[in-house]
Length: 474
Image (tube, rainbow, N blue to C red; front, top):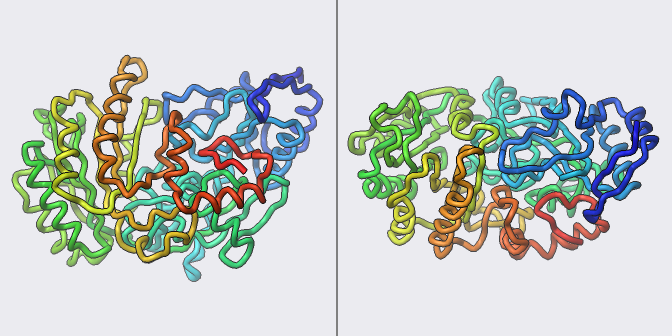
C-alpha cells in the first residue's frame, strides 16, 4: 500500500507509510477500509447530511482485539481517531476529517438474560436491535425514541426516552461496561470496579475510551402499550397546552406525554387538506395497564376535534419506531436543547410565539416530559446530572440539502432557543449539541460535575486521544 495522508492528533497532516498500514491490516480480523473501497461510503454514512467529514481510513473491528490494535496504531502514530456507533449524532462526532474512524457496526450482538433482567449490548447496536431482542421477553431498558439511534452514543451522553419517567436516564439503567482506555488496557467498569471511570461514562460521552460492551438493566414493559400521536389544528394550541400541562402534573410515571408544534407533514395519517398547515400534536406512551392507560389518557383524547387520533393499543416496538420516518438519513439537521424545570404560562407564550408566520415545512419545538425517577437521584450520581429537569425542550430544524435554507433554518433555531433560555434549568442535553456549539455549552451541560470529569479525563486519557467528541480536556 502507498503512503496515506492522515490527520494527526493536533490537526496537522501526517504521511503514514504503507508498511505500518499493511501491518495493521494483517493484524486485524475485520477490514481496513480505504476511500476507493466499495464499502467505504456505507462505513462513513451518517444521519446528519450537513456534516461534511471524510476520514482517511476506516477500521471495522470484528472484536475487542481489533479495537486494541487500532488504538495502538493511532496512538503510536499520533493520529486523530473517531468512533462510529450508529452515526446518529447531530454534530457528526462519528467521523473525523482526514483521520481514522473505528466503525463499530459489526460488533452488534445483543444477549438477553431474562432471568437476571440484564442485556449485554455491542457498541454497534441501534436502539431497534435492543428493543426487538428484549421485547421477546416482555422486557425493555430505557432508550431513546428513534430506532436508528446508536445505543453507544445515546448511553454515553446520558439518554432519555419514553421510559425515563419510570426508570431515569438511560445511564441509570447502566450496570457495567467493558472499555478500552487510552493506554490500550481492556477494563471492566461498574459501581464496584473502576467506579470513577464508570461514574464518568454515565453521561460523559466518548472522552474516556472505546466501550466494547454495555450491560443494561431490564424492566417489565409491554409487549403492548397504549401509545401514539394525536394532532389538532394550531388554533387549538392554547387548549392543548393547558390539557398537556394538567395531564403532565397529575399523570403516573407510566405515562409520558410530549407536545410538538410544527407545520403538518405530508403524512398519510393526516388529512391531505391539513398538509403544510400549522398543527399541534401530543405524542403519548403509557406503559402501564391498558385499563389505567384509558383513564389517564382520557383528557387528551376528549379534547376538541382532532385531525387524527392514532393513540391506540400497540406493540412497544412499534411506538419506538413511530418517529423514524420524521428523521430520514441525509437531510440537514440543526438543533438546540434546554432542560426545563416546570411548565408556565410564560413558557407557553414564548413557545407559541416561535410559530407565528413560520413557513419552514419541518421545523418544530418539542416539550418532552421526563420528570420522575431521575429526580430521585443526587446530582452527582453519574456525570449526566441535570437531576432537577422535568422537561426537555428541543428546538429542531430539518431541511433538504439542496434547498438553500441553511442560514434561515439555523437562524430560526437560534432565535427560538434564545426565547426559551430564560425558562431553562441552565442545563442542556450534550447529545443534542451541534458542531458549532461553544465549549461553554458542554461545561453547562455538566455544571458542577464538570470539574470531576476533568480529573478523570486526566487520569485515563492525559494525551486527549479521545478528542473527537464534546471534548473534556485533561
